[in-house]
Image (cartoon, rainbow, N blue to C red; front, side, top):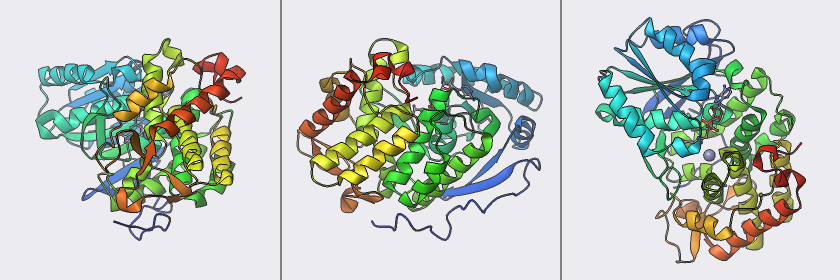
Length: 419
Ligand SMILES: NC(=O)c1ccc[n+]([C@@H]2O[C@H](COP(=O)([O-])OP(=O)(O)OC[C@H]3O[C@@H](n4cnc5c(N)ncnc54)[C@H](O)[C@@H]3O)[C@@H](O)[C@H]2O)c1
Ligand SMILES: [Zn+2]
């Protein structure tokens, strides 16, 4: 299957597709089309009341709000309180962190939802970052084989990336996102003022997925991204709205062509093969603050993927340098703190969830690689290229070597953002 990755398709969502009054005049409307469904996205600033009003119009018999303990305090608790005035509402909260995005949390939430009396008319509301969003997505996809799901994303990653998808999954100890299903959201509600409340580290991490889209799919976005990215992470809600529009333009186009992300949609996995392995290895390793955030891991994964492609003679040095430049502008450090063994990374890489899309040798892993910016290789093979493990290990060694020389890395990942 082929598609022109950079040309907007006629039905693609466009930033001009805006300003529809919906559920309150302060909400702007966007949409994307996926799996025979048009998903409405309503966004604005300081629009908590309008969001509760819009949710109220869904005629749910119950709401189940899934969140984490931080977001419960910031917004989800208040939203659940407002919804409770419309229909009985249950707030399900888990401690923050990747280690809670697992079957144990999901199973507990399924039981609590059924104890609460969930029916086919119940609406699951994911209020939070990508982690509660993925847990809620899977919960909604499994209950009665599918109840309505509304996303209320509160991080950049969630708003600009994870909710613009039908993929829902949780982790196992082997690898990230190993157990899941496809379930489209009914509606997405974004309060950009809430997203802007994220920590500087989460804001920086969040922009890396948008950097990924520009590098791998739409390099025409790079000049606008250079203007938007802020190392200090002092983003206004309006900046975040622009970053959202950049992401939606790319993801909306890919999802229209490949809703289940098995062909051109796999380009969204750029930087994720090594990135996911680093994320999982860093979560398992030592102190919680040393764990890499998803976007930080993807940033390192993209730098490593560019390095691998360069070692294989596929990508020139100038394009590798653009990777480094944009990650640096996003404020994310381009090196790896000591403590993660390349062998551990290779162990997780071997369980990458793209396994099986194309055949590979026993000492190879299938990765999305670029021949130039916006020019992914292997279009006939799910955009995947077999990479010898030795190149992956060399690229990880290189990140570690840089980390050994980096004062920020020595302070651990918490202080590891470029400053
Ligand atoms: N297609 C997909 O499903 C997809 C795509 C991209 C990422 N993901 C997943 O998303 C996850 C990462 O998402 P994330 O970075 O949002 O993680 P997250 O949900 O852990 O949120 C990051 C942190 O921000 C806090 N937080 C959330 N909203 C806040 C706010 N408004 N103010 C202050 N703090 C806030 C959270 O409590 C958490 O500590 C990963 O598990 C990744 O695999 C999934
Ligand atoms: Zn990602």
